[in-house]
Image (tube, rainbow, N blue to C red; front, side, top):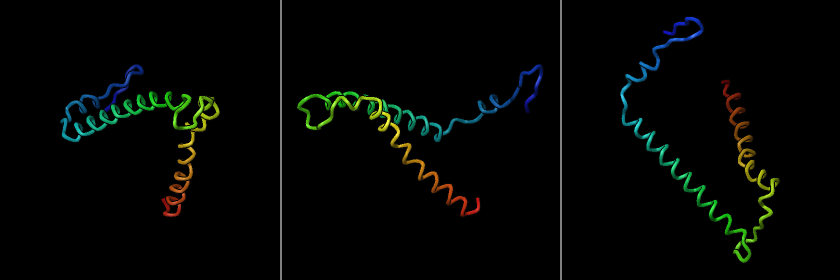
Length: 100
């Protein structure tokens, strides 16, 4: 139970959480998130190294350094967000039809 004295809240929740056992599930979560974190960092490093080479003259792709301009970069960053909105609207409509 939480008790308030002089604007400070005292609670037993952290002590109760510390007494909970650390199980195999917790290790799975920690190892899974850690490995994804490492892979994400590796992917960002690889893209950063390859992108510079693709803009050089004589590369196999016709990509110019003009892609680094703000308008093109903003479009590339925001494109996944545009795909999320129709999915969210569809989910909302399905929930509404189901009466939830």
